[in-house]
Image (cartoon, rainbow, N blue to C red):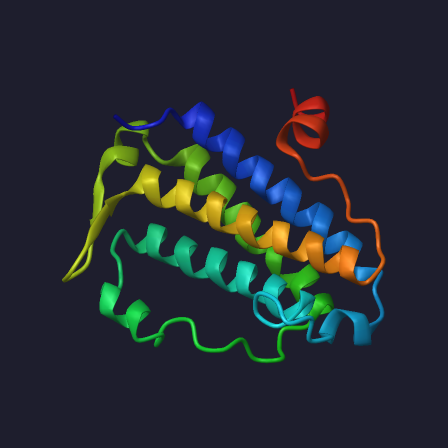
Length: 171
């Protein structure tokens, strides 16, 4: 059974807000701290933030096209190669809002009946609503990793909890 537009929009908007909180906090780091290899997801903070951005940008494109790339491209890592040094955090601050707006608008304007429609590739398919949940869940996983990396650097990560930070400010 598909999830409602209201619930999807709440989760997507939360994810956007949490991305913004984290990006803002990380922008206060020195370039060396942003780039430092902390032996974690995508090596460090910059690489992990770029990965979240790249993933959200990629999935938004798939949602807009209404079709998926073959799963074997993911398995062979042709779609998400090692993250290049660009874009840096200042570029992410400029580019990411376009992706956030696109995700929000996709959920806000797509006819609700379309959430249950399966998106297909040669070797896999998934309903739009499940793909949107994946986008939110994936970002949440990697934001948690960035928050741990901030702690490794001796920094206080921002509050990005859905109940403590988002729900109280966006009832």
